Image (cartoon, rainbow, N blue to C red; front, side, top):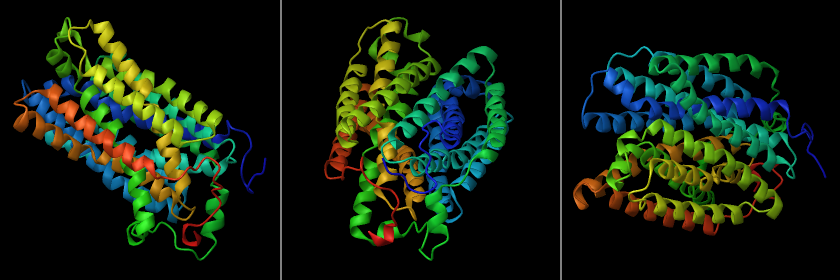
Length: 417
């Protein structure tokens, strides 16, 4: 096994541990709103259908922030380094978390969800880039698997914290404190050797526009984004608004279904899904084969969810668990994005791609609302089915001609390839 200078052959190195913990706090904050959505809006004086409408508005503001932050942090990651992004992003979303616990109006809530989204946008991309560049190609799949599986468990932690404190404001404060504590751990993390080499060269770094000026590069970039979109349709619509879907499905005692518990079960499944997809990818020595298998599994589970008429609450939550398990291709999706592009633009791609997936949610939501209100006269099940099928068709098409990257040596510059 060959290694590039400055690579670490130890899988559980400092970069992997810190990136994993950073993503843990990232997911904690990202999903906390879905968990406290109803209670927080009621506390701010919102009632009735306005809770759903204002909830859709707030989650759209959060995703818009991630879209903006994805570009900002991605470019900075290639120009200034992966470590600087890890520090800057977590500082911003830690402050935003604490501020979220102090809001008294929906407008204030929306502003700080926007700022939190900007901060959250840098964590995953910078962490995955750093880990991918720090490990040899034979082991980097294990590293990104650890980051993703530890990270997504942050959603489960958010639900448990909420159950312990029973106060949505304290939950936000807890997230902010965790983020600030994590800053101290990052002091011991070293910059990627590959980035140091590129930084010392005259190559153009972090050129976001270069992704659009070259046809081949643009198509590859769009493929990386489009193949991941179904996941945020599931998280942002099916799981976040699971109480509404439970009522539409006639789930037994549907009034007992909690979005927070559905999110916890979903992300509990996602932890195992990320581990399974990562190990399967290493065994098959392929990213695309595993991505394809999990997309099919994921689509099947969406059909199961939207046809779970009259099931018990335990069965409903069990379906949420299996949807999470089938969504384990998130780690493969992000790893593929990191492996497709050269070192001088890798952080830009790896940061913007997942955030464009997340940032596309307002568009997906608009499509869902259009079908729900204009085509199917308020039928959320039919609207969810149509939007889901359309998104999976797009995802399969995007993955189809994307090159296999399992054996790719990442020590190259995009300008020279």
